[in-house]
Image 1 (cartoon, helix red, strand yellow):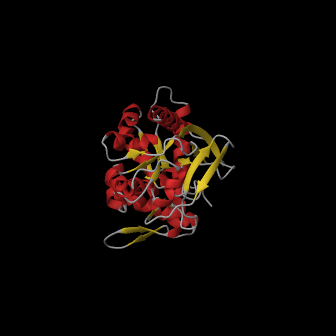
Image 2 (cartoon, rainbow, N blue to C red; image 1 turned 120 degrees about the horizontal axis):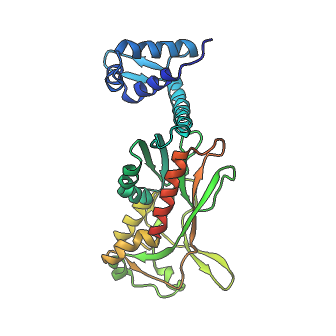
Image 3 (tube, rainbow, N blue to C red; image 1 turned 30 degrees about the vertical axis):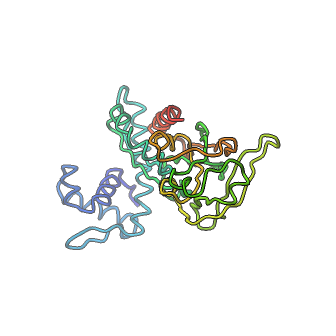
Length: 300
């Protein structure tokens, strides 16, 4: 079998993303026949249908989706290798990152500053509070809060998240302001449950005398599975929440939230940037991680 041509993979990547042979030809300034021949050649060499063509659209097949993930990584790595020998050239390629919803919103607000310095880079920013699989979902890095579960991943620590207890003025007007842990028996907690299998949340606080985190069961009237809904439910008067101080600061200043029980704070939560373990970290990803680390340090 003849070796697969890098240019054929690059054309396939464009067609798969644009969903059109014609648009790809326009984008790459190539004849449409060149695009068609590249896809046909690739399918013959691999022995698989990569794209389904109709009169109106081009759809990627499951085999095509598998190839797309792999070839994108390969093309990005080839760009990195080429950049090693091009002094003064800009970093090129695509960065796929996933992070919690609240952090993603803050990163997106400042991402233009990063791209001004690196105009040849493309950043695909995904945001979810669930734990994604870096390898199978094709991410270059993710930011996660909490203990590192998969020890095979490469972890870079970020400043820990300082947490505080908050409630809305309307909630406190109805239920009173708790002054002791015993008072919580008369209160509700917003239940943060990012994974369906996880147990209902409780009120957590760090006990300095025993150097342990304590857990106090509380009732709840609402459960949410992401950090934005969690803070929104608290602002809406649905209960007490334990939020990152950096995320709650604006609402505290605006009077939308009030800090409660300052003597019973949760322990700071560790956070990390995680990288896949099975390949070297490309320079473009390292540079983005450095920028992200600096930005997070200024926020916390």
